[in-house]
Image 1 (tube, rainbow, N blue to C red):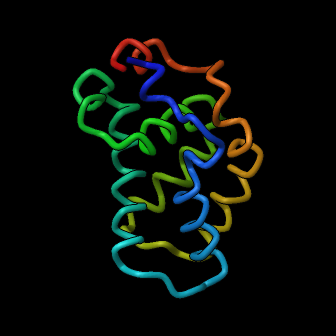
Image 2 (spheres, rainbow, N blue to C red; image 1 turned 120 degrees about the horizontal axis):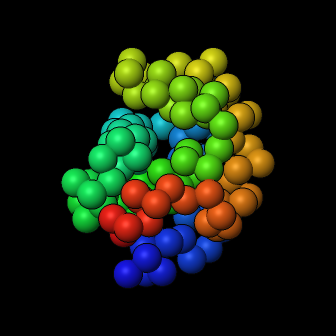
Image 3 (cartoon, rainbow, N blue to C red; image 1 turned 90 degrees about the horizontal axis):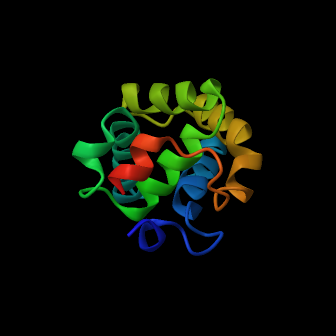
Length: 122
C-alpha cells in the first residue's frame, strides 16, 4: 500500500511548487487553486500530527508533502504552518517557504527520513 501512495514522478508536488511560486511573485491565480493548496498543506500537517487517523483520507500530494516536511528541517514546517494559520498566501511567506523547500522538491522521491508513524499508517 505504501508504494501505491508514494509519488511516482518528480511532479508529485508540482501544485505545491506552482502555488508557492505564483504567490511569491504576486501572480493572479484562481481561488480554487488556493483552496486546494491550503487543503493539501493542512492535510499534510494533520497527517504528521496524527498519522493513524488521517492517512486514509488525504490526497496523494498531501502524503508527499508530509513526507517532505517530516524529512526536512523545522523551518520549512514552520513556514507552512504560518501560511496555513493565516489562511492566506502572503508573498513573503510563500517566497520563504519556496526558498526553504527548493532543494527538497527534487529529493521528494527519496523516502529516507519517513517517520515510523506515517510509514505504518500508510
